[in-house]
View (cartoon, rainbow, N blue to C red):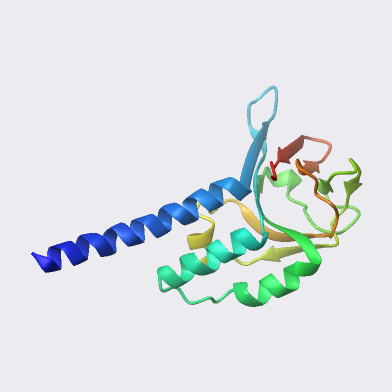
Length: 179
């Protein structure tokens, strides 16, 4: 009987840890979609996770609990990201609208709006090759989307920061509530 209790306790702990990560993931991840009016084809499907210390701590704990090697260097990234505001963003857009980079000719432009109401452009947009670790951390990634690390300069986020992406085809804004 003791083995059964230990097994149930171990399973409950793993489930609780996954649920805890899921709760943190949901808190700091927002998503939106934009469709073509005439055809209802998706112009843009995107999701952004704010990579603040709470989210990174949850990611590190989740990887440790699942015994997944930290191949993407989350511990190192937390130190690097302390000088900026970062987001992990996955984007799906139709074939003709795939450009997302720091290039001024990029199809999509992205801005962070904080307490002052001013749109702040990113200082870095880095494409990420999706690994098994990324798939564990970002369960919503599809085989059609692309993953990016987007960094903004440190600004006062205020209580309701917004992340806006726009092109000639669509505009979408994600909003967070910070205590």
